[in-house]
Image (cartoon, rainbow, N blue to C red):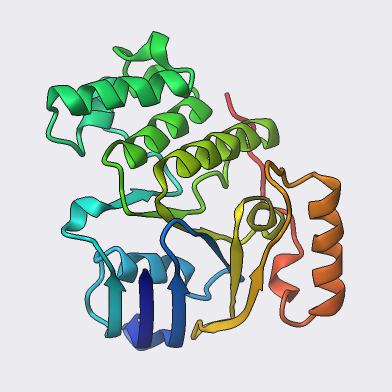
Length: 254
């Protein structure tokens, strides 16, 4: 069980004044649950992930992950792939492991499942943006995390590439049983992925609406059921979702 209770999180703004990013935020996630956190820009979504992942400990509150023994029980995937350019594809995945024979076997299996068996010895500079994200996704799962934190990992990809990666993510999540906390500003993406969506207010961010989803899997952002629920939510909560109506900027994957 993931139990988050953030009473207050501040950090200095550009002028050095304290900015209240999160306040009174309560969020829970059951083991194996896929939770999307949605909110407008600047509401504290990325700050929340940094606190949950232990990257930022300067916070009033607590984060508890039942059954986690160490930081190795938590996987990350960020907006950028964050691959080491001097390491091969395989070595980038093994970077977060002990590089044991078991870890090497799992890394190869994950990369093969993601269609990257032919580029294990290639360097990131030779890969397209979509391929680099697949490497980052394999690296996130190779440690078999109990909790996977994802910060808008598909935001800069074209629609077909992003949809392919979402399908790969769901497949690996279902196999692993990890709890996923996935941050996005794209409501359709959240509807396509989540078991439950938590909507954050404008800063200071707090959960103002929770939406369990019963839509059948697999689903994609352009599915009819997702589109219908998206329209229903915008009609039912126009003020709450005012910051979520714009489509994310799409950059063509090379």
